[in-house]
Length: 203
Image (cartoon, rainbow, N blue to C red; front, side):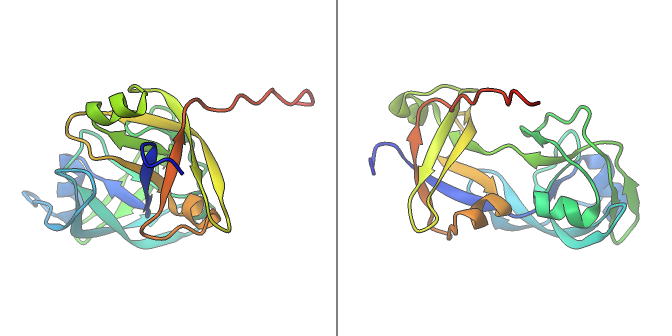
């Protein structure tokens, strides 16, 4: 595999980003999120705080809060989580929440009924402008990433996200990582351009 096109890959476990209003509703007035562990992207961190997520069919306890706070609360789950909760969340890029389902959140201080904000996060690659130039891609472009191994796979429709503050890393959810039997040191190779699949004539 080409070292020049090599991309580190991280699996994102279910988690939630909270707005200020929901932080206070769940954890109390004036509460400040407590960083527990730095994440791969500079300035982002896993918090000490967790919430319970309650859907029509079930609940998931101790869903980790990630910081810093966001303008709008966003819950990111896998398809397997959706089955347990009884929700049908679309695949969306972070922040694209219009038309997404809501859910109930429970914290130690209170509860929040989200009207929207539950998504399957679209697979994506964080990179700096220098990375993008080296790899020959641009912000918003869709690419493929190939992973080797016994359960090798090609991830299609991977969104490129470019920002000076980013660190090179591809993010997928746990279902996607498990399908390829990926470990903590996983990596893949960039393939420019997504595949084009013709529509099923029977649809």
